[in-house]
Length: 236
Image (cartoon, rainbow, N blue to C red; front, top):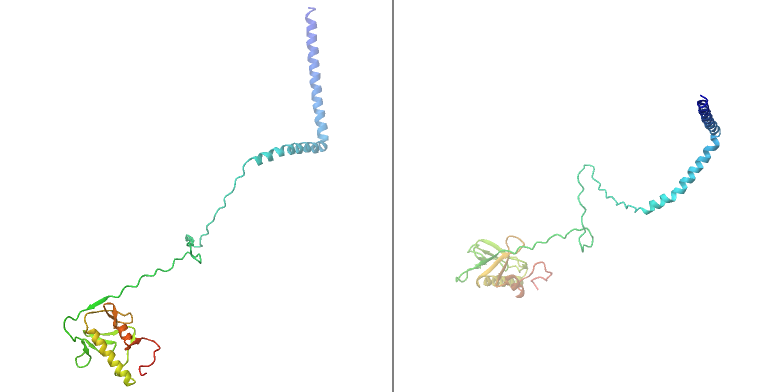
């Protein structure tokens, strides 16, 4: 019985000592919390300074990391403006190489002029097919040095002027006009010839034989002149 009593006393003293210490710790925490609350105005600026110094120390590392990353280049975006109606915008014209204005416009295409249709006139072996216009009517006859009728169709040599016979202003012009009339009849009766459009009307024709123009032949012989030329009068 004497041995059991000291053990119980020791246990009770230990429990009392532990409870005292726990109360002391709680009291110290409470006192520290009260002191911190009362001095919060002085403690908060110090804590902000500590946080700011910590962020400054970590800023260089952040900048170095950012500089180490490659910078992405933004590509320019091309915007196409649409008209108010919503219709698509036509593409821009491309300038042609060698164009002085750079407008990219091609010169208008020039088509070759069609060759006049040539009619071959063959009189055969019959001589004197063409005569002077008068009693024989208007069938294969010569009216003046540049006008004749063939098969009832009036034809006139293109590009020349000849002296007049009926409306001559002098005897010299009348004589020269009659000579041109005879010369044209002789050329028409000399064999086959070619007739083509003269480009100045339905009755205006280019008459030739073997490539020799009847109009040019009359000019060379002094029996005609170029149309519109400033030549003097036929009356010398």
